Image (tube, helix red, strand yellow):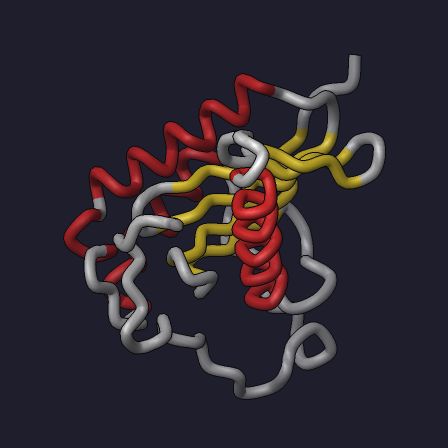
Length: 163
């Protein structure tokens, strides 16, 4: 049996803006772009499968031994990249963690305006929960230099029901 190892954790605001990125090692590529792409892929899959009566997508497989578990809350999305055997238990834990974050940090998330200091405590919570640290900076080769975090789009309503 192949032991599960969590490699990366991404917490994003509903629109895909990265809030926290944790990793066991340096991430190839820009973590902000990776987090935004996970959000786009999950939203696309949820919208696509919704039309055939399938609920939210909870995980994806990447290759034979890599998986991504998704957790969706009202304001936040959590992505956990792991290797090893697929785990329904981990998928449930990811959803539980999103619920914990939204319960503990509801005031900070509600109407979040892009101020990273408002959501800084979430990093410590996730570091403790997953036993991981902040992802090392990929340097200029992995991201565009001087690219600030992107605030949520004006007029966006993360609490609006999906159609």
